[in-house]
Length: 168
Image 1 (spheres, helix red, strand yellow):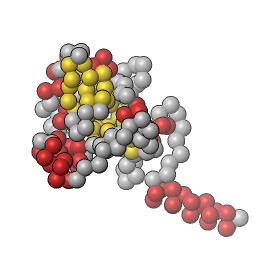
Image 2 (image 1 turned 180 degrees about the horizontal axis):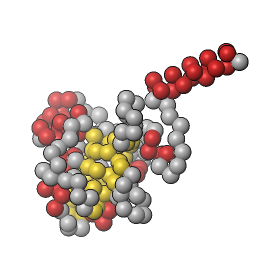
Image 3 (image 1 turned 120 degrees about the vertical axis):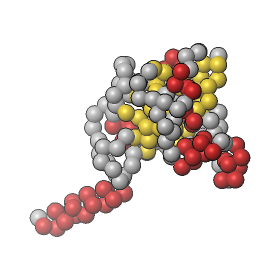
Image 4 (image 1 turned 45 degrees about the vertical axis):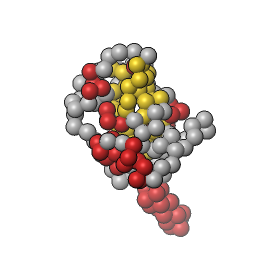
């Protein structure tokens, strides 16, 4: 009996330290890292090339996971029809029809092109939101919260610096 408890305890320590989590419920897919879609070809660039391609703010957000100040993005007020693409590699991430005013100060969407995003859950913080990244360039875009509108109930809270708007 004691050996069985020890094995279970060892497994739990391993699971917690390596980020393995068992989840239930309708949002369980958000709690683990998602693989890149096979349709999306990865883009690997050197740090020097990223610095040349991006503005300092885009570089800080996309490459180092920084967060822009709330209300600072011009995309908060963008209401035209079009597509929001990754500022790092132009991969389409959101349709303008999926955008809504979350009153948070950041562009928010209730749906995404799921095959164009990857997610990862931080292992160091309890109940922290799920981070989402561009599936092509691994650029950080923002976090997914479970307080969005129907039909998904999700809020993709994005840094405007990580996006470009392409008018239809």
